[in-house]
Length: 184
Image 1 (cartoon, rainbow, N blue to C red):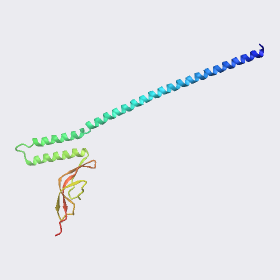
Image 2 (cartoon, rainbow, N blue to C red):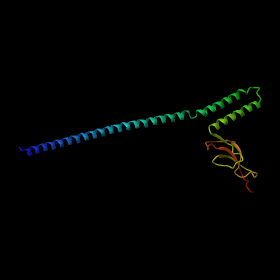
Image 3 (cartoon, rainbow, N blue to C red):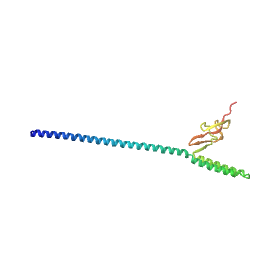
Image 4 (tube, rainbow, N blue to C red):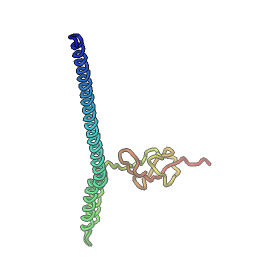
């Protein structure tokens, strides 16, 4: 073999070694990319599971809060009515056989005032529409009376007060309304 042939053989061996080195480097790079992608997929799966668990926890806590609000939402209103009940009990206890009517009346007036205060605390306000125009949204006409002194459709008597809660009608007022007398 001549020197040239030896050099060519060495060159070919070097080229083939370089190609093998490049191929193995590319394979290693691909494997590293695959490992990196697999790690990213695993990390994303873990994040997804954590996010799902967080959503589930938030739903559970929200459900518990709703349940508590339903159960205990009327607690303050109940306390107010218990106080009114205590006042009624005291009024009844003061009604001995020798009790004066004026003291009983005073006790009942104080109880009514306490009751109305409790309602107001809960956002429940009374409707007392006497001498106001009749409004079918707020009033229920129980009777109609002819009256030429009053304007037609005016509330002249409140039979039962109505109530609103947060500006919505809880119970309409039962009223007597006027109408113009029929011409003869």
